[in-house]
Length: 163
Length: 163
Image (cartoon, rainbow over all chains, first blue to last red; front, side, top):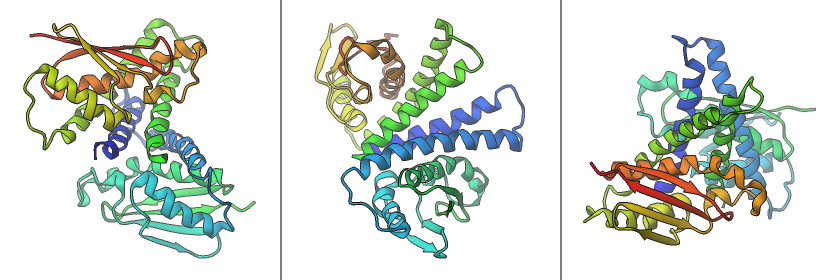
């Protein structure tokens, strides 16, 4: 229990540190400040995702196609990082995927209900980076965004960048 | 495997981020800069340690004395956070404890041998904070330092602050 919590607590600390350092000396943060924070967290996530997928696929057979990779990310990878499988994976078969996690690990520490809904993006930037990093190491360049409409449920949208 | 690695990768990212931000725009870091980094990482660790021990001791019976608390930290707590027990616990029975971990989790990613020995303190500040935070929540204020003489073995010294 505490070992799962370790990642969650550490993640919370990082988010708060990155926002605090960006804010230091200023009153309110503007959109540009927030974008910097998101980008820093996303970058950290990217490198962590790369490292994790490398370990996780060391002994795996290679994947047969893009969908096969996405399924692996939704099952094995998600379980290792976020402790559950993605609940729902949808695709338009043209490189866009929507991964829905109904109880996203990094949101469960926040109170559900609408009151913290505007805070949610802070806590998703790192994870978007993790997914993008994992896919990148598997040969898929992508843009990953996330949205929350009801806590702690979360939808990640992955758009694969074709060459 | 990847789930253990998650904490380690994330920890690496934080260390590198904190040092990079402190260094930005300067050439070399001086001792004061390094002290700031250590203090930031130690503070993060402190809060994470507090959170973890709170979860871990929720259903535990209370402890009978200081040594009993230290033993709990060396066994249960260490296992949850650093994935093994402390190898050796020594005390002078006057509030000073030395915890030796012969294969410290957050050093195993660094190459052993002497070449990175001077880098080791960067990777121990967070953990010192974790230990101090855990003890603080159990009612013991302490000063925690760490030293490495041979990688990846590490000695933590805990000095309990008597009132």
